[in-house]
Length: 463
Image 1 (cartoon, rainbow, N blue to C red):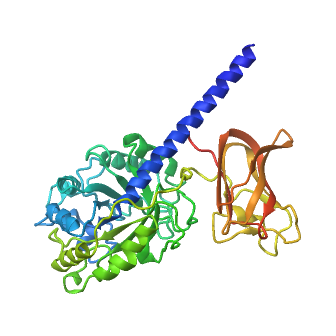
Image 2 (spheres, rainbow, N blue to C red; image 1 turned 60 degrees about the vertical axis):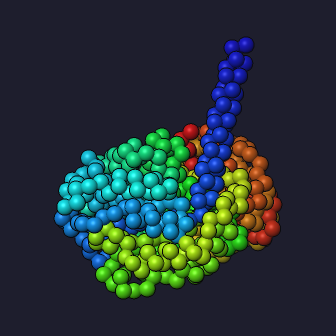
Image 3 (tube, one colour; image 1 turned 90 degrees about the vertical axis):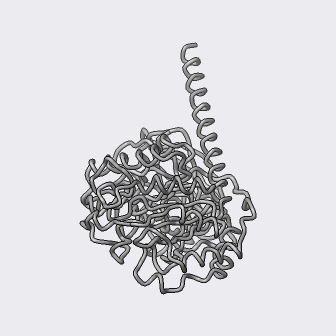
């Protein structure tokens, strides 16, 4: 009798957890839909690089350089309105670590510059006063504070948490926090070095309605939501969404000028053509559930140049916001935790030529384990160094070939069935109640072409 009561309590607890998780996914979907419905916004790269004629300035550049004597965030907001934009996003801290808000985390900030004014506050106040929503940009990479590859200390992670806490508690409702300098080939700071899951949960704790998006998701599959609430594409870096097939909530960014931060030749160099921006980018992207954010760089006075202002007005004459975009389908919650399968011992049935099992968990979606065509029921397994707890498995294919499979786990000397799967998408996400095992395996039972897995991933999510 006592055992049955305990079993009932456990069952009810699991059902309750499942219900809460489903509610979180639906709440996120609502926020994602609201974001893509905004359609068009303004990126504002304004920081120490503005005064260096470079996007990456000397990390020891003096705060005395930052001196926008005519700073007018209301001009920025009205310029955004002239283009029929719906929101702005300001670079609160870029890669060189200078903070343009009144932070208590470091002396390397705007209050020690000649300006001595909180630019973030002036920006959010001006944009809200003009009926625009506000978002913030924040860089994890920080060359001034030595938050760089192979040098990251616990104090760096605490600084990141402190700064994000300030940004999400001092300035009212923030629609989204756009993160940069994380898990990019040029930053080389992984989601393990600075734990993504911890930062993600901090953001959601401080502002449950704030989306968190990372600009460096190019290495992940286009139809999978990894380490971001919104898929992102930096078009200037050659990142492109799959046209006419995207169903993910997405963001694409591009500068109206030739680069992100202001350069001395900007006032005399034509900005990008308004008609091309509208027809080739904005309308096309919106039709594929993608929000377009166009960067406009303030000059050293803290104002937009005349040619940029005229370019924005020209966009506003050509384009009007017609309301919500196509509805998003039901989506899986994003992957935000550490991949426990990465670089663990892998084994499989006979592989095709050199495409052996190790390619299925090498943290690269450009390589794959491929089965030998002669094997009728291929399998792939990952071994852990010790018994490991996990509650999520993802099978990622470059093309959706596998359509029937069985997931199994090895414990106490025997294989046990975890679940039977029939997800036909190329990114197959399975979440379940936590189990402990020494190994995990996929038995492939049905497929359209020779099975090939780019990444077999295992996670132990905080829930």
